[in-house]
Amino acid sequence: NCVIEGSEVIEQMGLDSRFDFEASSEMRWTTHHHDHQQASVSMEGSLKVWCEKLPPFQLMPTRVLQSTSNLVLKAAVKTISKMFMNNLMADYERWVIHSLLLSSFIFIYFSFVCLFRLFVSD
Image 1 (cartoon, rainbow, N blue to C red):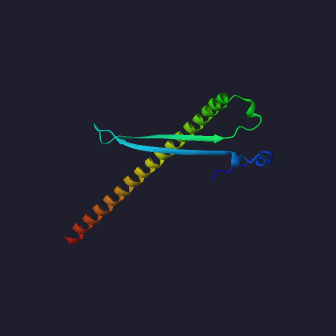
Image 2: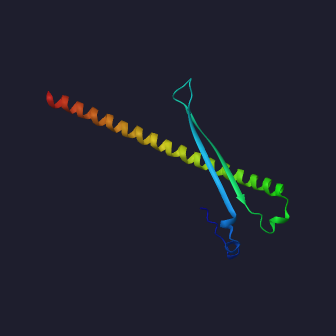
Image 3: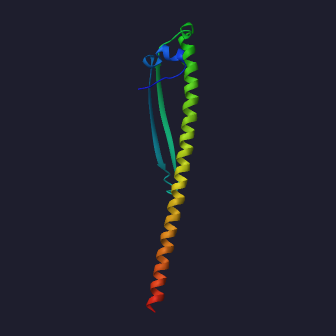
């Protein structure tokens, strides 16, 4: 359920029952065939919105409302998608760095243990 909150006027309009939307997104991870070290992530999505034409918007032609709304929603989805992908990339970079540090620590630890055993056994 979508809840629309705002001023008292907005609350009295009962927009919750006059508005509905459906959103979907799909992410794809693609490994490049020529170089398995590189990959790309892409995302596609759709957003469908339904709402009643409320005053004063009833006076405007439907096509004008649709085209204006589509422009606003497209810009909003693009901005949100870009932020999401940037955050995803930052999370991935942190994960890689953490994994490399952990691998390095494990390598150093086991190297030290092996050297210690060689030193102690002699």
